[in-house]
Image (cartoon, rainbow, N blue to C red; front, side):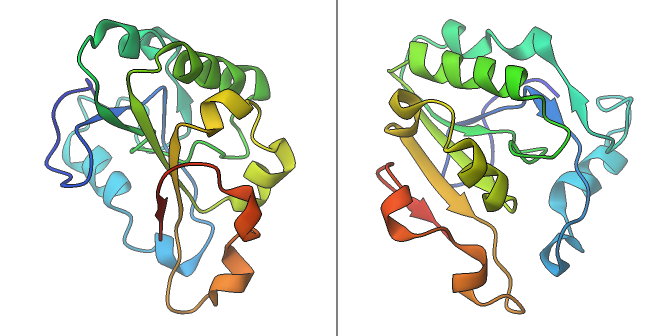
Length: 155
């Protein structure tokens, strides 16, 4: 799906260098991204299977005005199938486009912590969040408070 303005009120645009995901918690039961792939199958020929889109990596360089960019709104950036090399490319793009603020939501905080994330410079400009659900107590889902470096923590 092409990156464009979005109806998501807390961001300006989305950037999806990967799409698709797998359910990892009860909070995934009603995944909006999966519903979008079903509603617009022509835009998602792989359906909701995890898919890399290397052709999208350079998109943030073309956006000259600063934007709040929701990274991987149609997937989880820290998905188990995300190659570390591709993840490093995504973080390189974020580092090289300092006029944007990047927003990342994940339900896979453990992989984020294992990677630490891979680039401190990009991490300092991130607004990060961790998907939670009523069934999961925050201490079971959230990393220690000293790990967050961005300006905003989304819960």
